[in-house]
Image 1: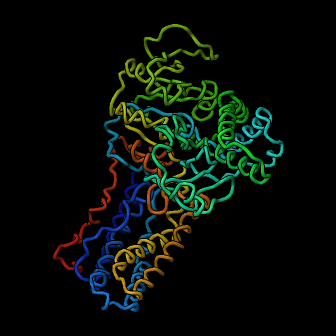
Image 2: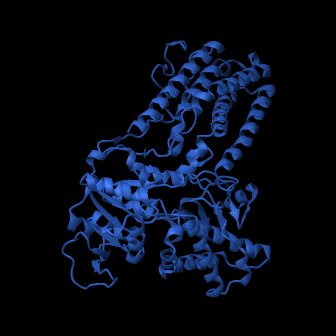
Image 3: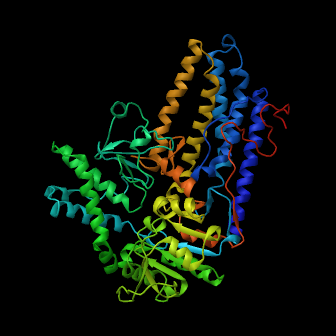
Length: 567
């Protein structure tokens, strides 16, 4: 627990230092009373670790308020550049206090207040929740599905020349089935320019705008509730970590057809790739390959074991609900935990068929023997040490009595694992987002902090100075806008050259991030993050200002107050 109190102390120190620097800057620049304007978008997802920049934004507004309220005739271009240079120097001066306290990648982040003292029962998905896989698995899935396209669907033999590209796609992307376009969409259904790909190559922004008559994607063609392209929806959202090979395969096959000027139907291609990926899982090809070389494909075993042991030691009930078959789970859990892994769980359900497991009342449970045989007897009780197949959540609740907010379920798929549980059944939910570690590592770099802090300050300058309509002032503001536009792709490329951050489309949250904040009470990089907290801990979401609110920290005067910037 001490390891977490230190970052908290540093966080408060950094926030106070920024407040102090803001007051000094305002005093030096003799800014008038704060402007009653609120800057920027709410901070969310991993960027919450940078919410200490809010005083910097507020300081920029205070520093420029006297210029923005002056008449245009009193403002010269030299005055604007003077404020620009002072603001830039200020961001450089406070940068050490921002970068000196990095975000801890082992932190559990909260979207909704939740106390572990209220949690009596812990539930888990298996894949990418208890079992974490190496990069070899995605290569395996890609290769098998590619070969299925060639052998079963009679695609050209030359497709074998394509190999899996590990860092091409990110989770949460949308795919337009009709147009064969892979893209990133924000929380407001707007396409992020520069992130639309046909095959392995970007589509020019002008062409995207022409195809969609702008950048907005109407609700009627967006993916359905579970991210699927069905019932007239032409968009498919890829929310599963297992979907990374599927996105890459779609892009590679599209690329092949375009390179060879082959006329093809995008809908047929999508369905064939979808079926090939499905065969990899449903026909057991992937499962057999992993079981044959489990040390090559599964990692993070010791940490998952430690979490389960800790929960068991403290008398917590535990259950497992997974779509994977028993043999595959048993082999993996023997490797991760040991042959006695079933003793840790009160209920184990395999091949559950989530998400229908959570809302379809028709499927009864069946007991599975150790040899995989299905028994025909009616299930009156879910017994510890036994394995059950299929079933449904309503029967699960009736047989166990585990309902409401005393249950916390962890999974990696925002829709299939978490959405129905939080919306329909009132369980608490925890999302496992392995990509967090990489993103936080980037966020903690000086390069990222410098770029973001200056871009935030520059945006504040543009917002305030745009009121000056004289030609000289407008020329200065336009130059600032061009500088800001040039910085935005650079920040995207820090995370992924094609699609950027999993959580951000420039300043807005991604569609993925929006779903994450709605369906997950807490989220973390791996289940091992639970080891850093005791069972009395309460997770609090960070209060970030709404657009009509002002960022007010202790010792900082709210907008419109008579308190001077000296404090």
